[in-house]
Image 1 (cartoon, rainbow, N blue to C red):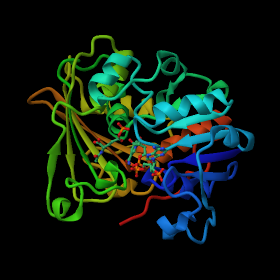
Image 2: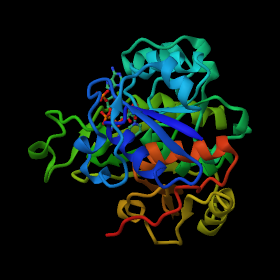
Image 3: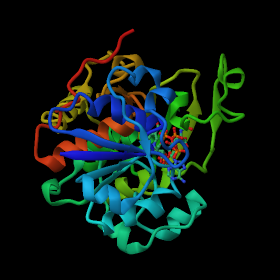
Image 4: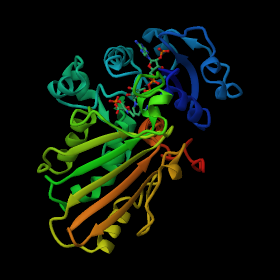
Length: 345
Ligand SMILES: NC(=O)C1=CN([C@@H]2O[C@H](COP(=O)(O)OP(=O)(O)OC[C@H]3O[C@@H](n4cnc5c(N)ncnc54)[C@H](OP(=O)(O)O)[C@@H]3O)[C@@H](O)[C@H]2O)C=CC1
Ligand SMILES: CC(=O)N[C@@H](CCC(=O)OP(=O)(O)O)C(=O)O
């Protein structure tokens, strides 16, 4: 399949180039930028020099549609909302990495993103791409909205508990931490080195735009789920997300039963690895890979369960999951082009 990448100069776009270059069924026909046209991508990303000589091109939906079958839009929220309808109207398939098509209620999107929502028609067209929990036959799908990075880690960690009504749905607390690439390539006063190095920051308290995304999916799984508590922290590391989640169990249940439930829930999920008791995952064990590693603990004193879920935000949290979704769309093995060992240490 021939594909194009818009937003190729960003971290998500560069990661798409890296992994799609190794994909057996895909060729990257063109890469696009709104600000760096006619420049070779390796000027922005020297690590790509030997694998591509491609030059960044303008964003012209009609022209792209004549040349490729599918476009990845690794563009900011508020930009994808304008770009994607144009691409779809030209007959292209699209996998969008932004937050513009994840929230199904336009009023909720506007409240949390502080941006103009897209027309409800396009929200309806978008299939939410949390790959492990998608029921649709994706080979017929034209448009996938890739999940947010934090929601991916949190939802994969909570799914078995919520779907099986094992927790008090009003007791969910998600305490999440992210590496700085989660904020994109442009430095800001919050993310540049002297501010971030040797520092730990909590941010967007009770205001994070991923709150409604997580609540939307949890309540699709279990209608009783109410508002969640979700806190986000910036950690002085490049990649990685750890979501530590707590909830009250509705009945007494042994650790072994919980562990078995998680193993069964993810027995066919190549990229979700359930760790043995006491083997809590760390972000480095998934670094540069599409894996999500999950561990559980049960505190019998409080009857509370704790779930720890780690991903690489640029991979399973963005480009990796987008390629996993492409594989579903192509009807090929979900690990095609993604089957590599994490970088360690
Ligand atoms: N970083 C992460 O961990 C994750 C990111 N995401 C989402 O993925 C998307 C990309 O994120 P990320 O790569 O980190 O962001 P970056 O800020 O690193 O890159 C954003 C890209 O968007 C392009 N862009 C900016 N303005 C426009 C415009 N007006 N028209 C077209 N393109 C534009 C920029 O390229 P240029 O200026 O050259 O056009 C740049 O390539 C975002 O929606 C983000 O929220 C989702 C999950 C995780
Ligand atoms: C570390 C960091 O700043 N992370 C970003 C993730 C943003 C993102 O991925 O945005 P959408 O999913 O909404 O498009 C944040 O917390 O806002």
